[in-house]
Image 1: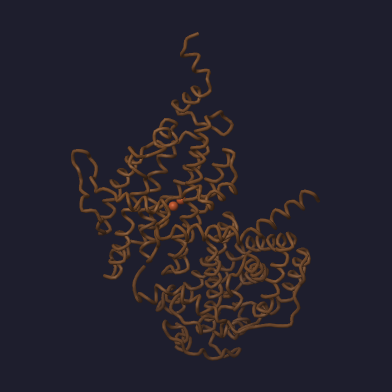
Image 2: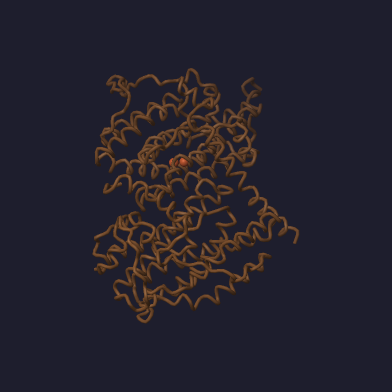
Amino acid sequence: MIPARVEERTSPGRDGVPPSRGAGRLPSQAALAEFVLALGDDSLVLGQRLSEWCGRAPFLEEDIAIANVALDYLGRAEKFYRYVSELGGGRRSVDEIAFLRDSRAYRNLLIFELPVGDFARTMARQLMVDAFHLPYFRRLSRSTNARIAAIAAKAVKESRYHLKRSRDWVLRLGDGTEESHAKIQSAFDALWGYCPEMFAMAGDEMALLDSGVAVDRSAMKTDWESEMKDVLSEATLTTPGNEWAISGGRDGVHTEHHGYLLAEMQFMQRAYPGLDW
Amino acid sequence: MTDDHLSNTEPEAAFQERVDNEIKIEPKDWMPEGYRRNLIRQISQHAHSEVIGMQPEGNWITRAPTLKRKMILLAKVQDEAGHGLYLYSAAETLGVTREDMIGALHEGHAKYASIFNYPTLTWADVGVIGWLVDSAAIVNQISLQRTSYGPYSRAMIRICKEESFHQRQGFEILMPLASGSLEQKAMAQDAMNRWWWPTLMMFGPHDSESVHGAKSMQWKIKRKSNDELRQDFIDQTVPQAEYLGLAIPDPDLKWNEERGHYDFGEIDWDEFRTVVSGNGLCNRERLERHSRAHREGEWVREAMRACEEKKRTA
Ligand SMILES: [Fe+2]
Ligand SMILES: [Fe+2]
């Protein structure tokens, strides 16, 4: 059962300010639910964003491919939320968790919630998150928590395909035309400062590190940076400098885009509460 | 040599004989110019319908009420993109390019199914489209599996395999609505009221008024007439509506024991012509949205071509 504090933070319709998450302050079961919830939120929010491309891609094959990636993320969200629901004794359904919280209770990292922008923006974000997700889920697939390990193992397979795609696209756009080069460069420049947050350890993750449930994100930063540098230079792009870094997602402090994403996504559940669909 | 034999040596007669004997026509075979043109028109129109048809349902992907419904709907709309691809490829075997066909669509020379010019106003519309519109498409496509042109026929066989999933997902959206709250029931009935007649119009004008009908039947591009297909659809759909508890908005609808079919009321052909001629609620927006996406994707396609060119010359 999730202790009352966590329940209060995430229960439907409540939008109280979450307490700060100091390392080691959460009981492990509560930390576990928070941790899984955050991974679910990352997946849902990016899946929602990618699904916006459906019918708008540069050509039909891309419509299909982006939908595949979106479906992977939505499927992953469903699995994480199902686990959160079970950890809470089934008091909240998957859909209550997905649709009935306000912005402050979502824990997704900021990079996932940013608008899709143009195709360059979408693909730059994908490369950055895919290059993170592949090694991250590889490590998480060895989690001591079998449930998390299983979800992560599937995510590894998906991420391998996602990364191949986003890498190919960044190379093509970087090396394509002057216009595509400029667009993909400005996409990286605009998104770069949202990346450090991927490597920041939240309190719940710190609490779950010793038991081997969570993995150390901060240890992955150097490899990620050198991989990005390699791809970007192969794509004839300049790797942006580290002048700026924005964070807040894990504490429920989001960009102003987040509320609109929720308003659209939650419309049915809010307009017709408590019904089966 | 008999006259009969002589006429058989003419390509047109030999062509018709193959068609009559149910031998598929393949891209390299000789075919009458009219047959080729007729096929390009029909297949590209069919492809455009799959693609424009992504819009009304796509309109609800980001607002689907549950995670499961969101995923199923996204997968469904994604399938329609796949159908568009199969069909563009089938048409390309006749010597047109996808770019040409899309150009013709944007310039208003090529049509798409008029049903997609109606708006999806509520979540129930998504259910009704899957159930009624995809059902109607299936009825048409099942008959087209036997069409005389090989690539078109094979595309139809692939597509039909996926369509039954579409019909089921629509029906499954409606089931909880039909047995749900008063609001949900009303939402489902309202959608039914708005989509029923436009769905019947999907099969096109009466056989007596159909412009391309006779030749298409002779060449076996079409295998069943508009009116036959419409009747098949109604006969199979009425029991499903009864199962859902949804009323069909047609006071003249009743079982005709003698014919072994349902009788039904006259379609409002004025409405049909209004929408076909560009005055449906969404005609302009559907086309504008498609051509905008195409325009906005131009730089991406250009970059892709540039890379391929570099690889070739490297
Ligand atoms: Fe289709
Ligand atoms: Fe379909």
